[in-house]
Image (cartoon, rainbow, N blue to C red; front, side, top):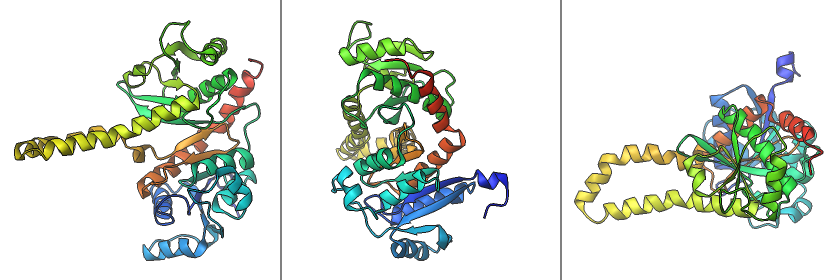
Length: 344
């Protein structure tokens, strides 16, 4: 029972305790760590109740039993994404999405099967009216701050209208979450000249020019880390390849440093002298710092994490979901999409 208007509006976040390679351990620990850091939201855990309680008890944590919702099935990483929603209707991913759909929760967080999470968010929670394709965004560090890339895999065959939506939603997300007042937007292309690109990107650019977005036109791959724009728009096929390559850079750099150090004692000493500085610099490339990626365009908040998410990554996913709720991103996206509903 809620006792005040503020409690009625209290953010409610449900976490898929069975999601990820190290579930339920990492999911449960990370979720509870998030609430320990910020207790301004109500936290729910969905999954196999006995397994969840075992993690809580073995780590001597305190958590309300009534906030644990039992789900007897688990959608595994290798399960077919969309089909699993029907094959496993009592899974943690399905039940978590239903809680958001039924307004029993405001946000759903999972490090489980990415395809199933996207399908559940789109088909169960549903899209914001007017959104043709939801989009997954990923923030990347650059020379001036942050570049947010939309789309990075929600859809691989986008149309011009969809790229317009990515630009609108990406602008709101970047402005609200990173405090960039008037984010610069660019379409990823093979050249900065206005006439370069494929049919989809050229048509999308014409649509975006009709909005009030801070659109600079085409940008190239090198502009992402340079920080030429704050929002980079592209088809999910291209974006996913790009982001997976970017994720490999950190491991590659670590390998090169280790390889360099192993060649001699002198090299080991050189690396030791700069290790703390390198760790701080490379932290910007660590996905755990950003948590998961948001699926924008859903009529609720959906955060999708790495299967290998650590408790720290899950914690940051939950805190991101809370921040998105407090900044009313869903209603702001809905208003922006409605404003340009006639552009095609």
